[in-house]
Image (cartoon, rainbow, N blue to C red; front, side, top):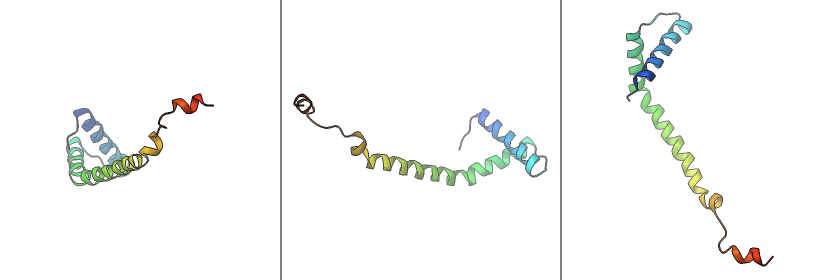
Length: 83
């Protein structure tokens, strides 16, 4: 998984802050970057696959109800005139 430079820098900074505040250890840019790379390679695919499953389920539900949500009566001109 490739990240743009700005996103990567923000994530490295977040990892460093987490380590400092929650684990009370100082982590440099290199170690934070290596941890980020590990997470992206090892954990990233599982998160991605779950997101795909969620998106698929969401769109399946929408497509399943497509007729109900998008149905329009046919030949509506005369019933409106006959009222």
